[in-house]
Amino acid sequence: MNEEKTNEKKCTDEKKTNEGAYYSAKPKFGGRGPGKLSQYFNRGMTYFLVIAASILFYFALLRLTNVSDTFKEVFGVLKPVIYGAVIAYLLNPIVKKVDIYFVPQLKKRLKKEGQAEKISRATGIFAALIFLITLVAALCNLLLPELYMSIRNTVFILPGQLNELMQKVNEIQFHDTTTSNILKTAIEEGTVMLQTWLRQDLLGEINEWMSNFTVDLLNFFGEVFNVLVGIIVSVYILFSKELLVRQSKKMVYAVLKPRHANMLLHLTVKSDQIFGGFIIGKIIDSAIIGVLCFVGVSLLKMPYAMLISVIVGVTNVIPFFGPYIGAIPCTVLIVLSDPIKGIYFVLFILVLQQFDGNILGPKILGSSTGLSAFWVIVAILVGGGLFGFVGMVMGVPTFAILYYIVQMFVNNRLESKSLPKESQYYDPLSYVDDSGNYVYSKESVETPPAEEG
Image (cartoon, rainbow, N blue to C red):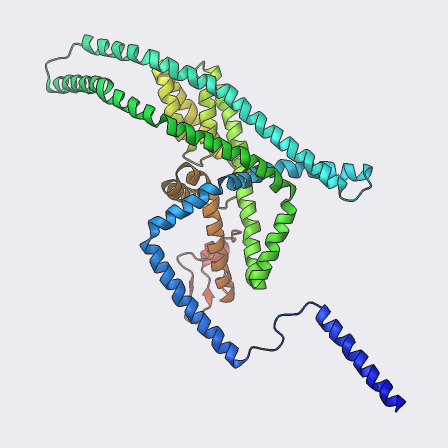
């Protein structure tokens, strides 16, 4: 009897121990495979979600204007966060450089774990903010006086130059020919149109501009406030960037399958390489072009040297078309002061653009995008047409990412079919037979393949 009671007590204790161990541990989802009822339910839910998504997409197309307004409103609310993320991304290289240099030095002197990283990060963020504030203050200090003087000189000089031009035109003796009569009539009509515009249309446009000035001023201060809040947000992002990256990575693995998650993370890293290499390299390239433009314009003794250099440097951020876009208003400013110097400036910009496109740009940017000149032009035109100036700047790296995804998909499909990936193998004489075997041509065999990313 005692032995039976002892065995029963052991069984009860083991049962309690097992129950406690089971409920104290975190439960695992799943275990056995899904039953038939669960399979039917999942299939029905899939059909329901597909139909519901189709209906929602249909109504979204009907109310596309309301949807776009909602997105604009959400974007307006999140502007400080977006600005903060952009500022943090641009300042991150400075913070990384400071961490690389200071962390090993501080670890030798500080024994407490993690203290060296915190001090280095704070120092890097402070240095990055000082650099940003100094750069903005220097640009405003150099640019605003030049801009004011150019507008003031244009307002005072333009009427006198127009009168002088008209006097010279009137002094010209036109011969009594058909061409001279047409030219004289065109000049007279152009003069009348210009005077009418100055007396009537210009005054109306000034009144309209003054009526919208208050709204534009409020919008301007609103954007300045968003940028200031964005700078504060960027500080928090830079302080906790490692934590944010780990949390994002954890969410990706939690939501997606491992294969899809790894593909998404790979594309994220590749996008960071393309955007980072292109944007940072383009900023450095544009700064050098701005300095060279200032030196050249100063040596040629042209007016508004600082204003012209800043415009050329800023617009040079736009690939290919940037120098020409910046040269147009600068040429107009110089021509109003001295037409001959305007011609010299156009020639100087052409030489500077050739130097940037063939020597400086490739040295700094290298193959950061991997796009040919044709696709660069396509990306600029499409991005500029859809999103304006921002689209012209960001269109090239965005298109480079899409190009990389398509290239990766095509190469993967070719590998699965045991076909060569390099484009030079697909010359006019080579082909793939009906059995799926690649047939080399003499040209493709003799030409070494080019590496493709």
